[in-house]
Length: 142
Image 1 (cartoon, helix red, strand yellow):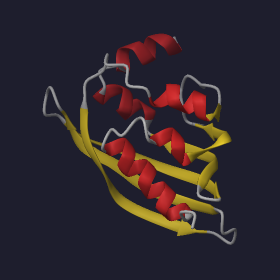
Image 2 (cartoon, helix red, strand yellow; image 1 turned 120 degrees about the vertical axis):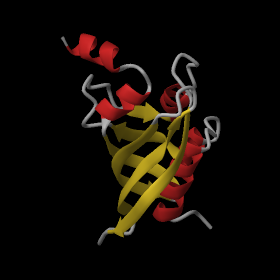
Image 3 (cartoon, rainbow, N blue to C red; image 1 turned 120 degrees about the horizontal axis):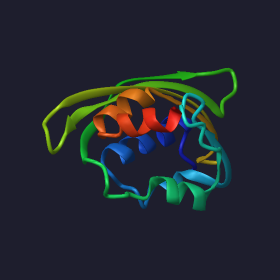
Image 4 (cartoon, rainbow, N blue to C red; image 1 turned 90 degrees about the horizontal axis):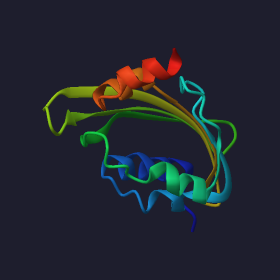
């Protein structure tokens, strides 16, 4: 039996927190539509598993974040494929011990146990700051 939208969401956020990068693309349909509407650089939508594989590939050029998913609330909708999930990643920057909390909301459609679309709303500024990339982000926006 296919995973429910709630189960897929939990597998995703816990997989990110646990750095199971190679497993994450398998949570998505081969053809999908993943956008980050609050991305200040307006990255294009991720449309395939291969694009998601690249998206989740660790680059090694940012500090490691020791994190876990917290404050999880999953709202079911009238459409059984769609959930709205609120959460935050909490943790510390491994090198500095700096604590952080990065809130997020996903509006996700899951069909046959795979994500077919997701709108991922994150606090990109805080994420850039804890990764040591805020100056680069500001420069890119200038």
